[in-house]
Amino acid sequence: MGKAIGTLIKAAAAGTAVYLTLGGLTYERVLNRRFTNQNNDARHLSDELYKYYGSPEEQMDADAWFVAMRPEDTAVVNTSGKTMHSNIFKQKEYTQKWAVVLHGYTSCPRGMAEQCRYFYKKGFNVLAPTLRSFGDDNQKYCSMGYKDKDYVVDWVDYITDMDSKAEIVILGVSMGSATTMLVTGEERLADNVKCAVADCGYTSAWDEFASEITNHYHLHKFPVLYAANTVSKLRGNFDFKKCSPIEAVARSKTPTLFIHGEKDDFVPYWMMDKLFNACTAEKEKLSVPDAYHAESCSVHPELYYPAIDKFIAKYI
Image (cartoon, rainbow, N blue to C red):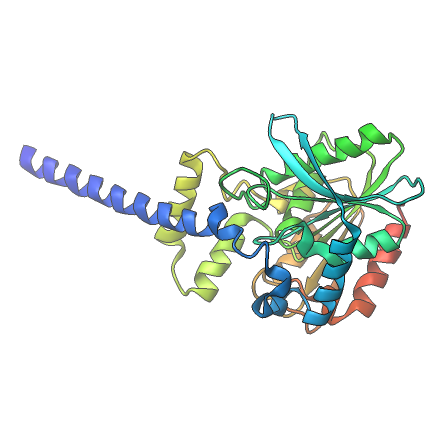
């Protein structure tokens, strides 16, 4: 009997070791900054990334504008003692209008050049933060928006400390969209944030990873996703299920425009309706035909930017 129990214990220990090893490998592959930052410096030159982020001509034109503007690289210490980085474009003349522009997974502020240029030309000051583990941020692991929301709330406070009358819109794409929604669910968010634009964000990190694993890699959620989530929690990063924009918008008071490309299969299109229906704030939505992930602004700019203009004009 004792021998059988010992065998079972060894088998359980071996199974646990395999489970945690699998989880650790998956976690490192998806969230370690060595992977998430691999395209940061060259993303505006990569033909493969243009598939998701617009045509080479549009991206290169916006990128050239971004570089020529020489935005301030601002670093501040936040409420948690972490050093945050952001590129800031300030208008020559005073304005209380601000846009906070949030990049996506494997991207960077420079990757949001098109949106930064759009807001700047509309007369907004623009603040484009580097999110957790990307670019100059020294955190080792990405949190898919979960901890990034604290960065953004602190950046909002940075703006309002400079100008208590500031009127702020937050726009994010993909992971930046998820971060935007998470921010709107924060109680300590300043009233200066008048509205938000959530472009192709996911309902939760768990749902997003589950979609990728099952639809693109044809694997089962168990054990891969469960193991990676276990490792993430053990390392003190975040619980995939608690990174939940859909829960955040359910308590949000920030008017939000939801945008999603109808052909998006990276962050599935169906997620927009779930998010929209859950949102308790004033809300609108824009479905963009023929657009894959994060392509809405480039595939149908004649739909995308007028919708944003009309929405923001109600609040700022």
